[in-house]
Image (cartoon, rainbow over the protein chains, first blue to last red):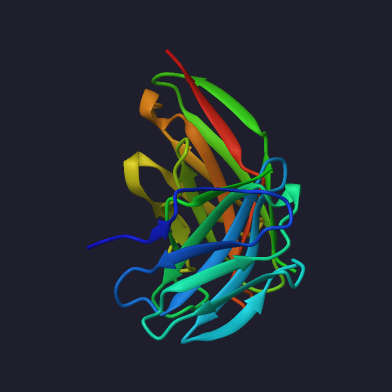
Length: 114
Length: 114
């Protein structure tokens, strides 16, 4: 069974540009989560999508947005990039989005903003 | 609000020695607790999870954790450390309900001394 996949592996952008990160969940999983792992800030929850709807959002500005497609894959968009957006962005998926559901993580996309 | 605290950002143990990584939680409702491991330049892998079924939880790679409500703790242990255990370990709590994000601790980097 294929795990969570993310693309691209690395992404280099300059300040002010937009970045698009993609995630494909494990087959059969309907929930997708996005987390940011920035140096010195730990793992921070960004967004949760389930059945195509945004269910919860972390404490991030509106320039962080995303969507979930009918096939349950997801896209994270970061507009007006700032230097502090440089981080590893991790996507996770779970079966139903329940409290006890295990979240399975992808390998991440490393975003570097110059 | 849910939170976890990991005591010790860095832990070093000798190969073959006991591994003990500490995690304390704060939760207004019965928590669901997780331990994840992250190897360099990789995503997170689930080691084990507590969902109120049994207080002693066995995970992969010989790790286990014990849920102690009286101490609000969920420490991770392994009887005998192996060089391959060198990684960063994260404790996380989910819930409480309806917004099933994971809230992570700050992580503990485990170093194994040959």
